[in-house]
Image (cartoon, rainbow, N blue to C red; front, side, top):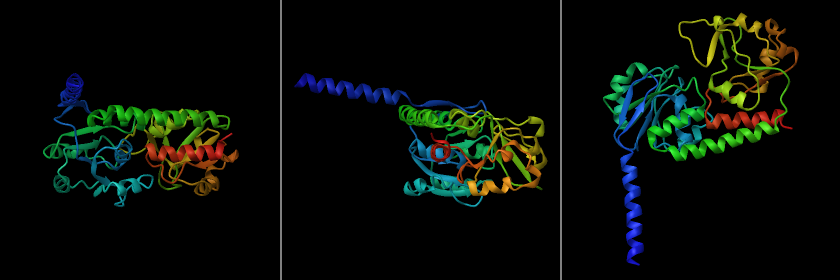
Length: 306
């Protein structure tokens, strides 16, 4: 009996010692800098609503998050955030350092780009807690999850979540009977304003590619505006007439709203319009995370399932 007890004590001691040796941890940020995380985080603050969905998906100890520009959370995961009592901070683009300080986080997460980026406030944020910088625009949510899991010491948990999702994608792909030709993804707003077309390396395109679609990527020379984005090319409305894909998906749109593009006289010669193959990707698809990805897959199966 004493031998058994001694063995259990030895195993438990070794396990605790191994866990302790994981900290402090060095995290390489998206800008090439390094953040030292002294201990396993238990109070995480997200300055980017675009990243918050992935933090929730991996069960991060999230205490507070910035919101979208309207002061709300994204529809695909707002109920999860409410259930976990995640506090709302500032709207995107209006960083409030004092409110971050009040939350007393032990890890702060910042995005490199987007309207919700707090990159310009990193110095002030690092005076509150260790701050890491990630880029969600050029990778899948799964890769982002792995980075965050590393920072949080939740690598195995993230591996399991990602593996389960990847199996969901593989199963769905096997059930889809996709239309012939290529597809494109458009953030459609009509004439007189800037529209956007997804690039093949962005998170939205990566998910559609994983489901079996061949994506049409826009010409980079179409870009308009001062900032070039890695996931979408911002284009003048007239450039949409040059798209060639046989199928189009509209970002943040239902199939009913997709009819607005179908009825656009300027775009009547698009191959996807002629084919009557313009679809809404889903109303809560502005950002790709576990929750919106599940919705997209569900919609694809309902539309193209064999």
